[in-house]
Length: 371
Image 1 (spheres, rainbow, N blue to C red):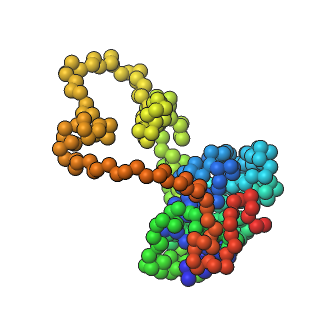
Image 2: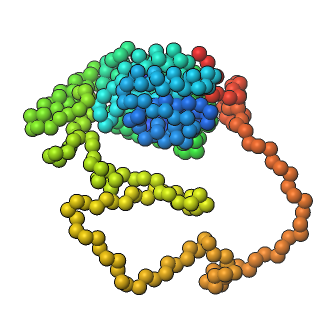
Image 3: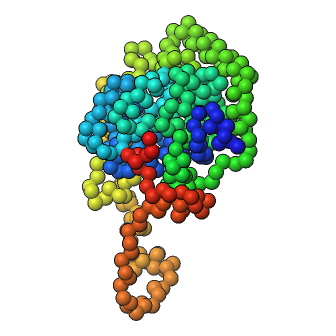
């Protein structure tokens, strides 16, 4: 089975499959985190991890990129503020935009010191780096030593799909039942499963070692050629080759204030009564360029009034809608008011999954995970 192949590669006993790596990271965070829990994450974490954190709780703290001391300060601050709450620390083994890696072993020790849970995303190096394709975890001898591991098959395994690997069966069952993208979407197809299994077998063989060595030779050649042509490649040698492109006189990774205000999006400011009708942010107004001419005069054309929105009109006030709307039904006799319904609560996994009759799981927040 595909779960067994992933379990052998990651050193984790329990694996849960997803349709993509994006859904794996998002589901793991939104299922395990409550609104009273804390999240401490790298500032350059993937979009799936960022959106999952913002969907789960407001208590989010970000530490400097690949800076474990900054992570320690944020974790200590969260633990002092909430001695009994759950803390989830999120990072990646290899960051795609900078091709650099944090020290996973040191970060895991910091999490154990403050009773925090570490979630690591290994999407960009699993299968492409390390002995046997184990990635940065294999290089640091951390196979099977992290708390939670998420990854995908779309980078080095040539197919779609993602996974969550853990040492606890309760975590797998809980994310399976309460992970929205996993519960309310279809699974990966048999063809994708067969491709992932074949790629995992190649990655663990001698052929995989030869392919990884050829990949590293090509990556080193690309970096040498770019450096010889005056470019700068950042990060460490890997399957990624980030090369910042900049104009003469502009610093890399920076934008002048005019361009930053013109291109970056800022949240629109509207009255509180109308915030529900503005779901998307609006761009910031562009600043005038120093060499730009005088501002244009407003047009003298007659401004036609905008057509009123249909959703704000009632059928009896709009003749076009009144002609197409059916006549209102006869009013029914009044009945007794319905009884107030009980507040919905999360059911245990044993009640929502008929195949897990032996499970005795009622709740699985981070502060109650088994050691």
